Amino acid sequence: MLQCAAQWRVLAIAGGLSLLILYLYGLDRMGLYSADEPRYASIGREMARTGDYITPRLWGEGWFEKPALLYWMAAVSFRAGFPIDLAPRLPVALFSSAFLIVFFWILRREFGAVAAGYSTVILATAGGWLAYSQLALTDVPMSALFALALLFTLPWLRTGDRRWLNAAAIALGAAFLAKSAPPLVLALPAVWFGRGRWRDLFRPAPVLLFLLVAAPWHIACALRNGPIFLWTLFVLQQFQRFVSPSLQHVQGWWFYIPLLPAAFFPWTPVLALLVRRDLYSDKRLRFMLAVAAWGFIFFSASTNK
Image (cartoon, rainbow, N blue to C red):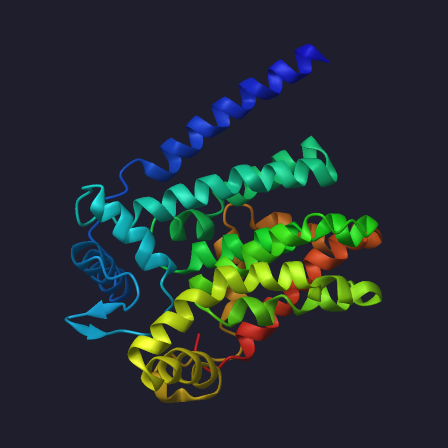
């Protein structure tokens, strides 16, 4: 037993060092990418310069397309003195690496060390996850926090144990701070799979914890900036992005069909295991598959991709 524990410690240390090298080496070799990275970096740098962490500003004007979490992460990095190409990316890379550690820990507790090890290695080295972990975009913070929220519900689905639902509520609130409404919509499978005791999800404690994390910045920014903030963030960037072609990010419903296997490279062949019927004997696995399928359907149905 002691020898096995020592081996796991060695593997954990080696894995952690490998993650740091894989995710941090050469992080600033390429300049900020596309329109979004420079925009988000500029907003974070302005927050660091002015000390105003309520109103995101681009060229001196309020910019309300995304909530504040990514801007705060970049601002902290700028305040620490990191250069322009590194400061906005470093927090995302560190955040992704930390998530992988927690991901392994939760899966090891639920499914054992072997399944957790394979799953973590596959995710950590999948092309899509690795690429987005090295860009200053909202995708990885939202995805990681949303995944934590759902992984924390697994003990509740398995045994009815409600102790981790408070942690799930905090993670979901943080995911809301990363990208607002989508995490709430994507979490609907949790209500369905826990429908026999769905009231557990809406007890005062988890609801209050969610609101304490998600609501203060939204309220403060709305009070300071008025209806334009609410209109831009929720109506234009949430509802109209889903239904209207006016935002000029229109793609066909099939857009993610080739993109998903490409994002899993070099592990794309592993997707073939999804056809194994015995995979779905465990309610927790059916739940996670339903979350993935629902997310795929939801984003495929969106007019803008």
